[in-house]
Image 1 (cartoon, rainbow, N blue to C red):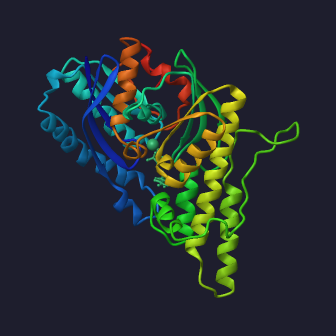
Image 2 (cartoon, rainbow, N blue to C red; image 1 turned 120 degrees about the horizontal axis):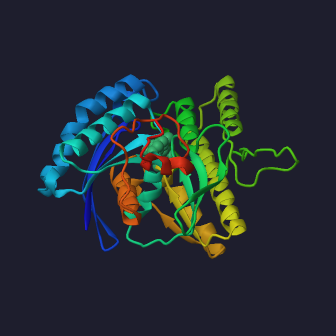
Length: 356
Ligand code: KG4
Ligand code: ZN
């Protein structure tokens, strides 16, 4: 049995969790999140300096809370994990320094975790067991990627967005429509009252130099521009902006694009299991469409539990437990943070000589 204290501070959520693995089964003991969303909402997006400062203030309380909720002490745990990349440098630094300090003071191993490996591991917080190989659709505010995980748990990227991430597109379109940040939940709410078939919107394709289109890549900039044009045409005509129908049509086309390309990739690359994680994976229209379309093709779908789709520390802890399960690897206490780092190279966090 192993117990890990996990920390997440890569963006605008400060989070701490205590999580345990016993005979391969993961048990979440306690998980606390302090969201800064309301504060950043005033500025229409995340302000890095504010984020770092709020992490410094919130993290000690969250850590205290998860220990007092479980009755555990630092001497009862086996390792400390924190997100070290990618994300806002100052924000990442708060979790990383806090984690390394707790590890050093208690002579515990420290594990630096890649934020996307955290999102990928949120799937292990659900009830069902999942065995590799599988294909993951990772859709968050910073990433839209199709990642294959093989039997050796190695990652291979098959698709990505060439401009905005899906969550970023939700956030920017929400802003255009006068809806609050974060845009995903706001658009989802509006879309409930709208007609998803009213507007025909582009599905954004990436041309290949050899002709044709990239089968698994994404682009949301054309869709964003199309939304702006629709908005302007109503504005210029001094007509009421049909926010509900615009939200529903936008949500529908994003869901269709994500589902169509993921299923095509799963079929063509021979994956029978398709996993969806990340903040946008909380979207109910997208979850429903993925389930329906995958069923038609006999692909098994695994969805991250809604409460662990957006940033949290439980997923970081699950990633650390999966690392500990495979080896006794730990990161150097000299490991710093990196705002950008490819998931495929996250092995380097466990090198004796840290990569950053
Ligand atoms: O994974 P996450 O919490 O942070 C990143 O790592 O980026 O994802 C946040 C993103 C935001 O862009 C937010 O608008 C989007 O996920 N999001 C949603 C929903 N809930 C959050 N997008 C669509 N529908 C939702 N229900
Ligand atoms: Zn995230």
